[in-house]
Image (cartoon, rainbow, N blue to C red):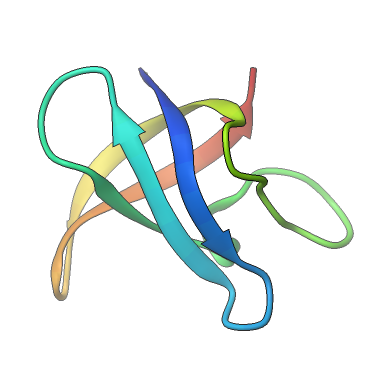
Length: 66
């Protein structure tokens, strides 16, 4: 699992980006956020996640707030 900080997240569109501790920022989609109910992230949230190759580049999966 990697650690990072939410750079921005658009609730209306359901996606945003996470700033990694090293390397390039990664895309995050609301479907990749762990938990029940309304899934969202806030700018500045500390998160942990895994990275995989998505259709348009690197993508965060199994995202959870720390």
